[in-house]
Image (cartoon, rainbow, N blue to C red):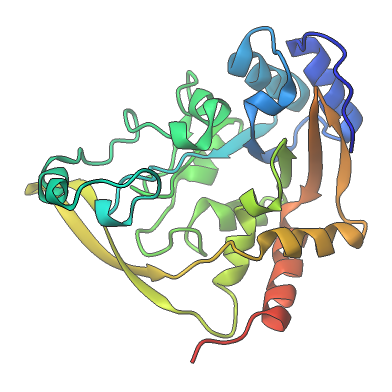
Length: 266
């Protein structure tokens, strides 16, 4: 999809583009986004969030991943290498998860703006939380069990039950978090030991738990096959290529696709 730059983007122009894409009032939306892909936006990330809220209206709900990507063993952090000699001090000093304070900037400016929005709700998971604003925000983020990072007891499953739709705004299917819910439903799963920093009754502590080994390495290929079925609406939003699709349909397709295309471990 080629998106021709037609000048500055505004709250009103972005709302018009979202309506043209097929988004409507009262919907529940899981948004993955890249602000820079939209072109120059008057008002930046705040204007983008306002545009979504204008389209969704008071009965709608906007949800974003609000992951605390660094709340894990620093030896597993992605990005620039950290000297091994620093790791003990980092482990001893890493702040515990606080839904009101812990940033999700690594997910982008739009996600961080939603997290900080007045009246926003955030799920309690210390690594893979979701933030939401709108009519169903509290309901959708109320449960997020520690072992269920992106599984049945997470906002992803609640979004599926709510019949939510996904908007991929300037990002590809590799960012489609809903596909991870399908991984939890495969005939096989590989456990993964994990830990995060939390505030417990005894104070700050690393809390261990057993999650699931997840892998987004083939999500781009999975999404391309899903798009070929006609289940994805595409169009420009600002200068970005955008995709709109049903979350329940995406999870169902992904489960079948992954069952067929992935080799069971062992």
